[in-house]
Image 1 (spheres, rainbow, N blue to C red):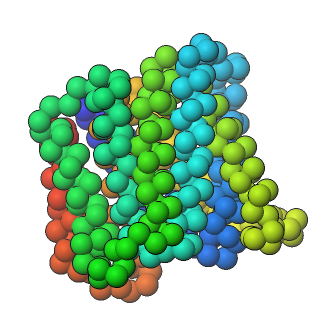
Image 2 (image 1 turned 45 degrees about the vertical axis):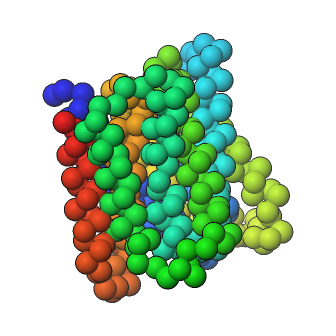
Length: 294
């Protein structure tokens, strides 16, 4: 099995997992508050990974100073992006928030090309553009009204997620190359949990955080499900970084198809009508993935 096939499998697995996890996370955040939901989901993900790491690896992570700095930088950006995404979904409009936050591969590709000397062929570049455009079409960004296209608080928060996540992946890619994805993921998860915890502390009054609420949150089936499935997504992406010679651009782009999964789940759950443009967007996404694998 060649590297591109492995990246394809891992990327699609991450997209499916992210889509389901976001669907569960969105349902939880509506009842619990955005940062409360994000923090509790991340706690579950981190605990599961930490237990698995020390059972299988049985040693403390060994990292060079430079790899550690890349991991810390990537984790900080990832945590900020996660927080702003949940806040963006709370504010809306979701029809803009979802595709805008999913456009982060463009940032990743630009960072890889400009700073890390990534090499992308013409077909791969076209594939990245097609996937991003397809995701946006599937999410409905091209058929919303001009009024909704104004950059209100929700879309601006989504753009923050796009920017921070897009910057985080090249940093994490360098950390993975130097120290392996297992150790990088361990430190990354722990740092994300701490940073989201700090964000929750500052928003504790706004989200009415109490001990009873936290106990209720950790028993919530959607929080537990989102945490477990999110772990699968993170593992798939971080493992894929080890095979991606384009500074993470390919694995990140394939995994960013997750809004299509979330939308399909929402359509089934809420019995919504499927627009032709959404179907066209799904086709563009698949075409882009094929181009990325050539």
